[in-house]
Image: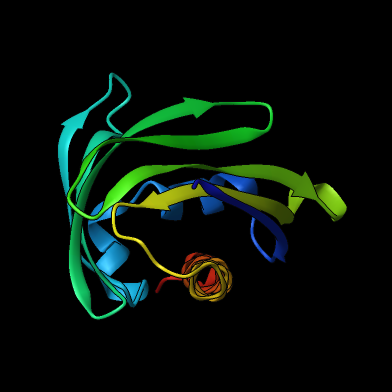
Length: 157
């Protein structure tokens, strides 16, 4: 059964700063604890990842999957669809990055994810895992964005 979750958070950075972190797939292993490897297999015309292969740790297992990415604007949107995976049947989602606060200095990020594992797991375990994944993903993303944003605003000299 496909499980669907959505969460929102406010980040102290502009939508474009958030977008830059979200599409820097090769850096995911540096800040997303469950992602062990991310490789861009194909880029789109603007140079961002169009097809990305991941290796992740999930419930004591190594999981590999490939996602195809789609991009939109107004607000900025990064969506993905599963193209193949060894332990997952369905893994689709998106980040929507909408300006918030004064002069777009903050961003409201809406993270939506629908997933179905290939292995049978009791419902309460799935729900607990989904909640942990969502919270961790957003917390770690916010930390990465705000750290990167703070570094960009520092004077160079």
